Length: 91
Image 1 (cartoon, helix red, strand yellow):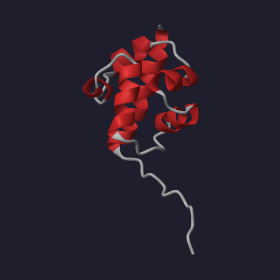
Image 2: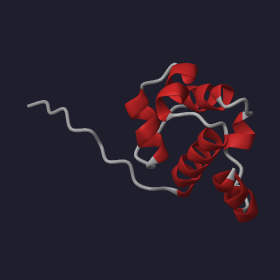
Image 3: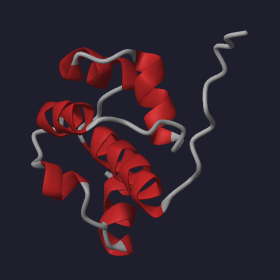
Image 4: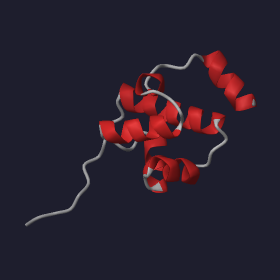
């Protein structure tokens, strides 16, 4: 019997980092999840799941998100220091 159960993604440090950075840079760019999804050619629910650390995405999807945010992949995957996070949330 075949089942279509989606395997639960475990929260890993890299997925948590990607979730935080995607949200941080999206908000810094004053974009909605829908706008980011359109620019990255991804579904808005997919962006939401990424920002919640619920998706284990492909390198292609990481590149699409970085490109939509005008970042490089390494920039998207680099830890942001708290003072930068605080500044972006105030802006």
